[in-house]
Length: 548
Image (cartoon, rainbow, N blue to C red):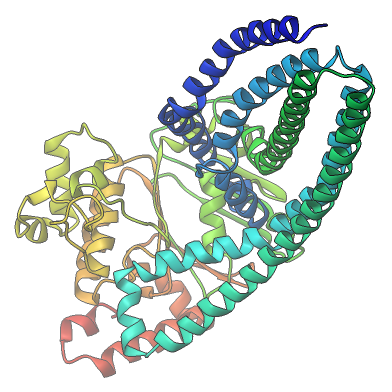
């Protein structure tokens, strides 16, 4: 083939390649914001929603928490993971087309050249795979934990609550040392990864040198044998182009492999089965709950520790029940079981005669209202925090604010119930005290209403007078519902129809306040200790009478 003919062929092939290159430029370079929007809307929303749809027992496990965080990294980054994968595919397609065009140009010289260049590219990629595997292993075992630690430091330094402790207890040097230890450990692991890739790059350089020596040596021999010098120069350019395309394809495949590895955890999370909350029986009677624990035992998943051990009790409809005991006795676990978050390891929990494990959880949970120990408020308005919605019944909202003893506080705010909590969204947002926050949670529970109220330490941050007043109101407000109070402070128990005393996963005492005081055992001892503490530490007779 003459130089002129080959040149025309090259020109035609480049014309064919031009629209492909232009499309790649549009998709990758000019349309990058679309990838960000796609990642945020299509995948991040689905991923974040997954934490609400999987079983609570799975979500609470340390294994899933770690897995979820690792999967989130690939969705919240512009340079790795999903977004990089979306950008790499158009690039890879363009590079393959470019390689094909250059290979067609070289095929007139010697098709064996293409196989030789392909062989060198495959060797380069094969050397890359161990380094990529090593990076994935280091990231899974170490870096993901360190990056989670880094996220914690970011939260810590912007948390105004922790800022007080940091200053008073002079934690700055200690925390800086902790952060430096984290930085050193993170840098050590990233250095190990870089060293692996440095070795790969060195081998790739050696392969490139051998490839170039072989190709250029062959062309020089052909030039001595009569190859047209213009074709010699053209073929040198073509070989350089093919080598460049092979390098780009190898790099793209390597990055796609890394991105796919990062997305592995994301796929595991997204493919995890959702909780079956829409199947099962509806409660036949919903006015109030009659609850029976029948020889219930429970251990948390993947542990051997027995939290509840063969406990049995019965709660009549519309009763107020108190469950008391020291820390770790299993009180909060009973709340989680009644919420349907976990299933008993043994035994049965019956709600109005129906096994809780057979119920439609969406319907059942719509009938219960809870206050948990670790409840958090949202950085939205007070009204939205209470109603848990943007649209709400204003009359009902005002009513529960007053019932929860929050009216005076709300009226003192610049925008009343429309005032934002904290300053994450509104710079004029306010912070509530511990007691005010618990009143807010009480208002939320009262607003939702229900046939069953579960209150886990609902007044721990309130003073004794306010606590006594709220319990008196609460008994009146919930007289048509079954209520269960979990508390360390025993001032709530005198309002209850029945008291269960829990210790080390067993019910050790059961009865009314008067019955247990007469029994003069565990409950009476605990009650007298608390009464004595309040009486000795208070000058207010009202506080003393709250334990009489």
